Image (cartoon, rainbow, N blue to C red):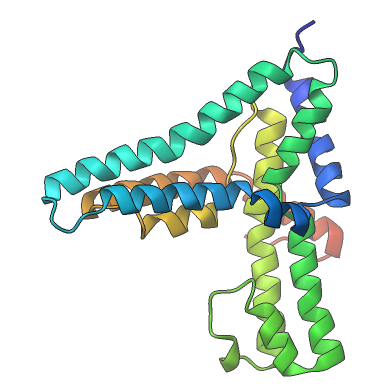
Length: 236
């Protein structure tokens, strides 16, 4: 019997994925053994960059190569997701298996672990340890931050990544009829600088902005959830 992936099933899938990720997360042993979907995509981008990004190629050729790379980067994970869905809807426990797979697209436990390490480091071992811990979740130079700056940086990272690493994928899982392949906005932004061709990179930036716009639709919900959990008023 085929499962009907209507709104009821997709809502259940989102809830199940959130629960599995909160309890299990994505174990470090699994990362070391097989990697992570973001790592796989990064390797794919690196392979395409090595194969297609040649300085001797004309601008038109680099643009065409960039378009090919962009199509491949989008099509490969989308095709894998559709193939997995095609199999899972035919299995008795397909929803449970889909929840396990979908949990890899959510980052709530990892986000909690990394931010709590910053707080623990600051409280237990001082500023130097706090700077080292926060360096794993921010791009700025931690050596220029005082204790308040380290705490602010961790909170800012928490607020940003809660939206695009938890709320956005959960909402899309709950509302999309097909299991979405949702990657965190940061992984797409990082790929901009690695794809070949100036024109193709401009096209990828445009695609990144479209992903940002999709994520932004969840921003009011993110704000409401933060306000509900902290008791602080919402701000636009």
